[in-house]
Image 1: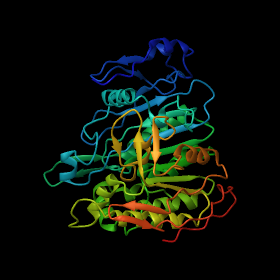
Image 2: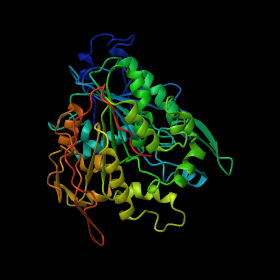
Image 3: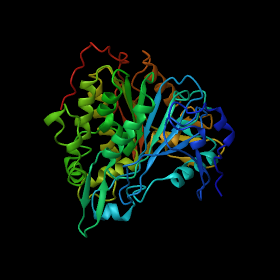
Length: 436
């Protein structure tokens, strides 16, 4: 049975009465779930600065097939937070009767609540680490940040605000964009002036972070917001095809939820169009993309844009070419970098080997964790790369393999070596447009 991440009520005493809101420590509750206890608070403001995860229900939100409100999970630094990390979680997508009713391609559409968070916490406890949420890892660039975990349960990559009715009359609430707006209101109210904000996400959550970046920066005003999209590269139409984008657009109607000032440039509902706007609109921002060179999960999702493609995954060569195209485009701007990794990695203390090159970077590598050793890519220190990203260091540059392996041999010179890019531009500096 999985070990449980227990919450000590002793730490509640560390919170001064009120914690900056009308709710004091007496308003905190412990919810019993099949996966272990979860601490709950009526507001983010009432969450103590004790580095313990706390569930906060957000009224008005819902999941795809469950009207019950979902919420946020908050962890506040004990003192003097360096910034705020907002993490939008992933979990696939769905866009028709088959993909939504089966529940195979989209996670948590039946609801995300305290028991689901307890299961995640239990898995982290069993693994002995919690990746970038782990404050005990010295190399973790977010260890001294306040942290907010944003669930995903709407099948629309956090972009929708519509109710779809599929062939059998089945209704699916694709309301991820609406949910995030309600979350964002709560977050800004509780953290009005953080030093900076890292808007991060993995897989579908990474695409959600791209989609919601502009509104997040607008909500925080003068506070800089930096984007980290893990395993969520905004590919061009040769890789993330127009056919696939249209399938999503018909279901999620997310072209209604593009940045207000993007206009016709974002009218196609493409993630690369919104990302291009983010770069041009916010030259003082920083934008970090990572991917393994043959991510099997993303390749499977992209395969739905290629009719009749079997098996349901795009070729590694097409995926790699798409990564190269994005890297080449981003060399024309000075506030975005990519981190692509080939090779395998070994999780020390366990007997299994996991293919680094075919899985999501964030969750499978847990960079900075001493239990992880990367083989085949000895310089692949994602924690250091993200540290440079957060700090805006001049050392922050593209990390791309010049030779990568595949099942049939090697692909050489796919990512030609490039001179390190300059650090993030100043607000007054122009940013060249990425070619359409």
